[in-house]
View 1: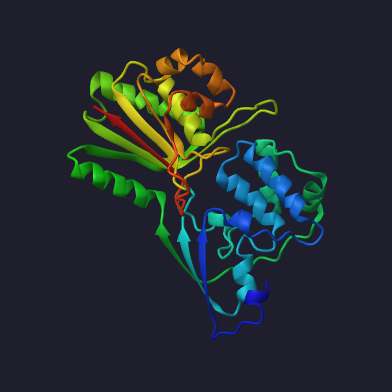
View 2 (view 1 turned 90 degrees about the vertical axis):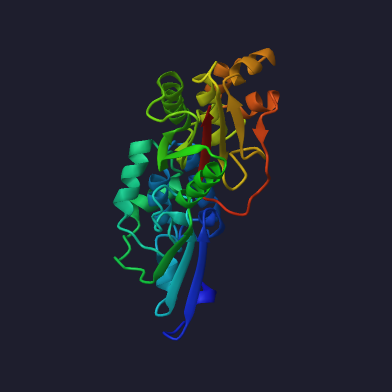
Length: 316
């Protein structure tokens, strides 16, 4: 906190905040270590909890998150320019809100732990249960969202219109298990293909948000939430004239170097010809292997920004 120590009302703090800030600003409270925070983060990532629940827990084991950085900078003026990677663009959720306080507390965190079955280490569990609650405070300042999933989807729709293709934005706040969201998107696209409703062909369907993948202890697959979404989606569109892209806008989807993948109505058939059972790959959270086998990984490299998941489905 030395950078914001001893500031006055004449000082201005400009905070540039984006996804990944939770990992880059670790500051465990007294009694906890960096290793404790790392173990907590790993438990959260495998729990299937949505980002709002993860952040409710993270904020309670940090001296920075949950508006505490802005509190430390008082009485200076704080201006936060935020690239949002969270559904709904709540600034208190981006990077766990280092400059924006919210109403979550220790009880909120413990409720989320119980609800999603998060396996806590003994030090973290003891801290959440026994450490004194922080006094309520407000982190006051100026907050601006300068980039978001909504903006990215609007840009994609504009590009589609330039090529005389109708575009529909389903939502930029979709959350849930990746494979379930994939099946939901497949059901919508089949309806368009078979009955020309609720949208008329040709059309590109766009959506964003942040899905999750609940990984069992024995899973050894490769991939991430976008490739898992797409593998599930591809199974639901077999035989249809549909082409889709699902990718993480930061350029990295999960454990490998791809941002996501491409799929069409022939993807599962081609995977079978490559000697794989796509249903089994999906069950083992091994979507990367499935798409790699048919040459359909999307590998743009790191993009330098992150506005969450991006999905585009073209129906002709």
